[in-house]
Length: 163
Image (cartoon, rainbow, N blue to C red; front, side):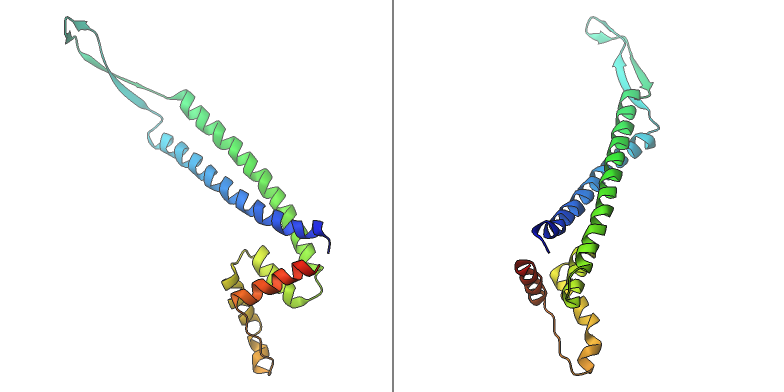
């Protein structure tokens, strides 16, 4: 395994974080657009008609459609949506590269750890619990394997340092 192959794992983690951030931003823009729709796209304001001395002649309510604001919000949402789709397409390509990299690892145990950590996006505690679940049948056959978060992380780190 080359250093370039290992960098795919880091790039994949960064891409996951990027897509999460983009989804949050997209959700905010969608919420803003929904708020504009809920108001019925109408805005209102009260103005005075004029003054005679210090007294106003009366007030008037002006109601209208905020065309520029709604158009800006819709365009911003569309741009963000396109960016998110492009980033997700890149993420799908990275997932394939990560899976190919993991499939090329000789030791099945390390492949399982890498898949759980990178592809399934589990933390080390979750990886340890899942590994214990995967290997619990072997404990009954006399093979004792007990995974902890630190043992899984160390196996991961040692593998990456070795190759």
